[in-house]
Image 1 (cartoon, rainbow, N blue to C red):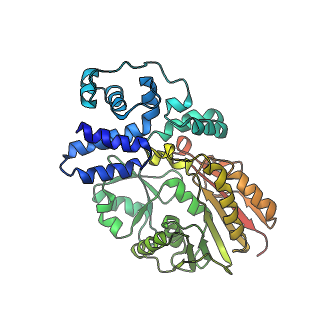
Image 2: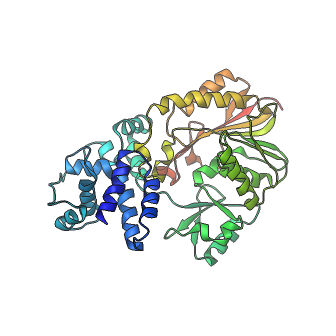
Image 3: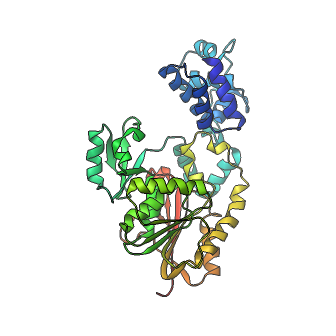
Length: 400
C-alpha cells in the first residue's frame, strides 16, 4: 500500500496532474484495493496535496519528498506514534520535526508565497481568516429547480431519499447537505431534474440578473450551463434564453442538462452573438478562480501568477463585446469567482469610463443581505458567508 500512496503523491507534488486526476488514475490501476485502503489513499493524496508547505516546514525541508511528507501527515495530523508513522511511510527512522508554529501566512495555511502576499494586499487583516477557510472543504449546496418543485418540497423529497438538508442563508434557492457526503448522482430526484449542485454564492450571481418571464436573456460565458439553467428556471420557459461559450463540448453538455431540467427555451449559440439586443446579459467571466480554491486541494499550487495580470485584458474584451448586446434600459451583470481587484473593480471602472451609457446599481436591492455588498458590488467569501469567493457588478444601460 505504501508504494502506491508514495507514487500517487509524487505525481501530485510534481504538478503534472491535479490531485483528483491522479487519485482517479491510481484507483483505476489498483482495483484490488479495499474500501478502507481507497479511503486512506484519498485522504493522504488530498491532505498532503493541500498541506505540503506546512508539513515541509515541520520537517525543516521546503521541498520534502513524498515519504517524508507522508510521515508528518500520519504522525502530526492522523496522530500515529512516530515509529509506526515512519514504518508506514517507508522510512527507516522518524525524522526530527520542528514543533514551533509556522511564522508566515503562507506556511501556516500552505500557500505559495506570492498567493499569500496577494491575499494580504487584497484583504488586509481578514486575510488570515480567509486563508484558514480555504483549507476547510466547502459545503455541498444544491439549487432547487423551480420549474419542477419548491425548496420545501425538495427538502422533503431528499429526506425520503436519505439526504438531510438545511436552507441556505442568502439564496432562496439553496439547500445545504447536512451530514456525510451522499452519492447525489445516484438519486432519482437528480435524474428527474429537481435540483443542480451549485454553490450558494454562484446562485447569487444568477439571481442578480433578475430575469423575468418573457424577456430575452443572454448568458455570454455559459460554460457547462449551471447559471444558464438557473436563468431558464427564472424565465419559466417564457422568453428567449441565449447561451454562448467558446467551448463546444461544454455547450453540448448544457443541452443534455436542459432536457433533464425541463427547459425548452434555450438557444445554444455556436458563434459569438451579433445583432442581439437582450434585456439581461450575464458575463460570468473567465478568471483566476481564487475564490474557489477550497474546491481542490492542490489548485493553489497550479495557478500561474501571471494570469492575474493577463486575465483583465480578456475580461475587458468580453465586457466590450457585451456592451452592444444590452438593449437601452437593460441590465448587464459582470461576475467572477476570484479575489483580485484588478479582475473585479478595476475592470468595471475601466468599462464605465469607456461606456458612459452604463451606470452601476446596488446589487440585489430589496432582497440581498447587506453583508454581501461591499463598495456597491456583490462580494461574498468563505470566511464571511460560507460560500466560495464571488464578485459581481450590476450595470444598467440608460434609455428604455
